[in-house]
Length: 305
Ligand SMILES: [Zn+2]
Figure 1 (cartoon, rainbow, N blue to C red):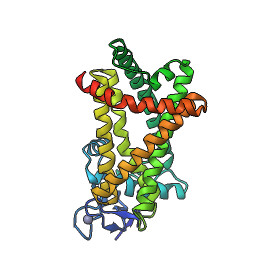
Figure 2: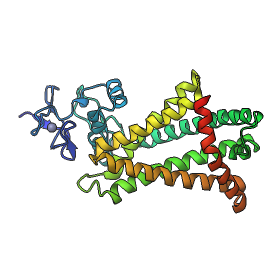
Figure 3: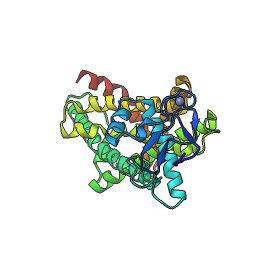
Figure 4: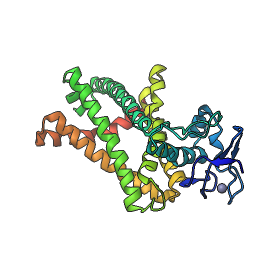
């Protein structure tokens, strides 16, 4: 054969997950041939030839192949590219095949920063709307004191710092707790070369659905209810993406997800209340109690409004 394997090992067939030696073969005339899976006889990774728009749409549609292409094959290609000092795997001169969709792992960090920025912006915008609702309810005599009063009584700079810290803490906890639970508690990833990176990338890709509400802030409708719905849709994306990538049963992933969500809620709320009160324990407890009191009426009010 006058071609050569572009990538070797640690790659999988995106259809049946069988390991593969290569994704495609490049011949000296520049012709590319996708590798056929020895187990299911389909091309091991058809996304190698697809452009990023198709890949993006398939990610939105939660197509398992799209996630597996990115978090296994493309990530592996990028890691190899970094190890050899280039940005991505070069399939050969004149090859029509895209480079590793990640480009380099630097892109992964940049995507996290972008996601965090959106998260902070959304956080500011939704809390602003919630505060407006709270004031409206209070004028009708149906709302008590809330942590939002504490936040909005401070300077604008303090408010931005507060929301930035809250979003950062929330994303860090979510990411690391999920990684810990899946790898340490469920014992997943012993036969995966880079389990932490694979999970990190999966979480990033699926968590990205959370930034869709940005569009709704541009064309606002009944913002708060829709934002809450989209948050839950984003959570479903994370659960489904984790299942597609790890092959763990739904029950295990849902249990992990609920536990991580509860820990996040508790830790983030407590730490942010501490931050808001400057470490005053009694006032922090008052804030937390007011949050618990407000949770039920807020949602009842949302669904009726
Ligand atoms: Zn296969």
